[in-house]
Amino acid sequence: MIPDTTAAAAPSGADDRPTTETPLVGIIMGSKSDLKIMSAAAEVCRQFGVPYEITLVSPHRTPHRMVEYAESARKRGLRVLIAGGGGAAHLPGMVAAFTILPVIGVPINSTTSIQGLDSVLSMIQMPAGVPVATVGIDSAANAAVLAIQMLAIGNARLADALEKYRTALKDRVMRTIEELRKGGFQDDV
Ligand code: AIR
Image (cartoon, rainbow, N blue to C red):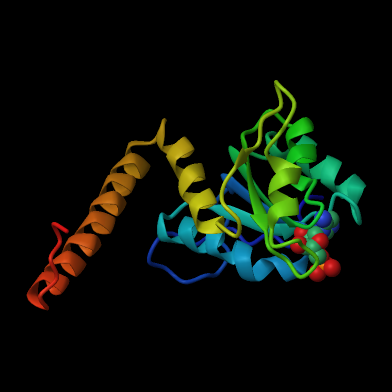
């Protein structure tokens, strides 16, 4: 049975207790030490009310579990996978090899990593036909936003939520600009 540490998300605005909703986003990572970075992806899914699961899958320490996870993901109803790893981060690429679901890779600047660069290089140059959409180092939140953008292609509620999210981002910048202007900031220089 995959995964054994599933925590499906509560609807937006609710608490963190697991629900019985079928997860749409699978968030996986190579080690518990990645959780402090990868939990940001779960938080974004929660904010958008997208059911997700989060668990550990190591391509080197639990290789059979990795194959089982990737091969069963689509059948279990998942639509997109977010895979994080540090150091020799082979998880996203190998998971992508075993599923046709889109895989978003999160390079992690872990303690064993060379500032995250080895992780990036382990993910980006995938062979033609087996892509991994790699986000920035430690950018788990962006991975979740990208996953939700994929889901929003066929989901009007999520598309609307993303429009509001973008408007909120813009409003925050505009407020800062106004505050700086009041403090004498010249925003045209
Ligand atoms: N890792 C785990 N299995 C394969 C790899 N590449 C990565 C984890 C973590 C790093 O090794 O993704 O970022 C260090 O793991 P740990 O468990 O030693 O802290």
